[in-house]
Length: 92
Image 1: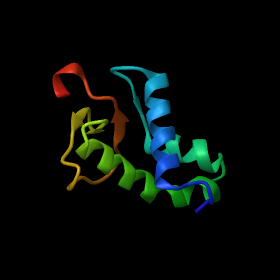
Image 2: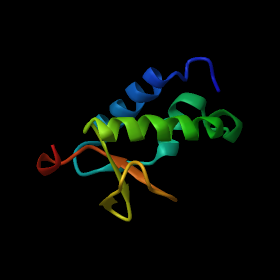
Image 3: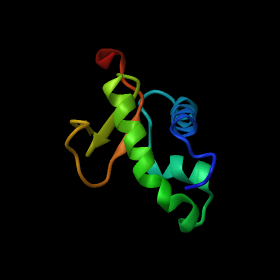
């Protein structure tokens, strides 16, 4: 894992990308990993699990939403492709 890819860096990058995208829009976990690790798979690939762990923590804190097929998931039990978004007014 790149030296600067500590959870705080992943969190800051994730939240910045979500704020940039805006309410009602989502990003993929690979967007976060690539923002830190670059476009080469050997750079961003190892960051995917750490990105997921940070996303789960932030969802439990109510700061983001993890979506699968457009619906919020249980942060402790989801599989497959997922997206990240900011919580809507109703979810906060």
